[in-house]
Image (cartoon, rainbow, N blue to C red; front, side, top):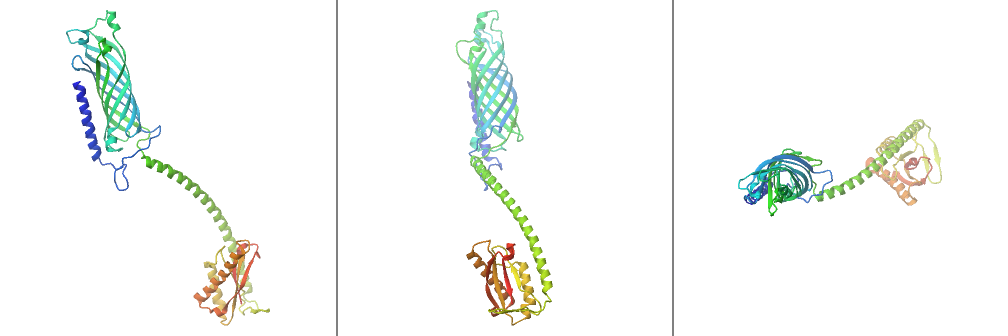
Length: 423
């Protein structure tokens, strides 16, 4: 048992060294916005993530209790594949075996120390605990990880050669047991070379009954295996913290909803842009027509129109009453209409300092209710008068509110949203 005790001590020392290494290692991964390391918890990964496989070669040392667990070395081979379910816990399925040899004379009652040789294979499952991640927190860039594990499986021993036994004696052969159940502990070390490739140092102790070499009086035979090898990570490598994973799911759902809303908005904006483009074309046509009307009326003779309320006289310049158009639900003059008003001030209002001008506000009856349209008509007139008063200094005595008109007089609703200035 002295050898086994030494192995346990080495395992403990390596684990403590790994914990110290993990505490001082500089790794930018898994830190919060303040640079503080965050340990987890981590979300269980998907089926295709964090698989690993490897192969290793080394020595098997079989020992028995009769000779104080002094053993002999033979070649060893390990081939395995496994999966990590969280950063601390994984499972592995492995083949271990090749050759073994040990002192066989004691069990046969012989005086000389004869060598017993055999071949064997051991198929076992391992439950693996990454103590480096438990103590120091998961870090993908950590160079050295120490992983204790327990293993259990089936062993078959064959091709025995032991000079202490008489192969001609059939009774001796009856005491050999080729198939055994075995178990034990191990220490699996990984050395990170790249994200995918790592080196391995595997120290494993395996226990099995001594009866496989015809010793029926009980006892335990052990195999100390030490191997060096290479491994590879398969599939997705790395872990997401559990709260981040839930946040990511929620964020993904929100992003999907936002994307759908954005697509709907984009489609709606595209339709509106098409409609605005059509409206722009129609406004240009109306403007061109108004310009033609203006040119036709510019030199027209003066006309006197009388009614019971007041007298409207077309000025000698021949300028027709001005109509200013507004956007839907708006009482603010656009830059285009402000230009029209400026032209009217310069060429009409300021040309006849005594003339009084009358303002009528209009609205489209097919849009909004009467109360809203009434307020909108009055607001359009008030805003127009305010511009004339504040910007051009026209006296309010010359600017009179005449009334409002809510109708669908024009087939185009945009032409029913206006202020008409008469003189």
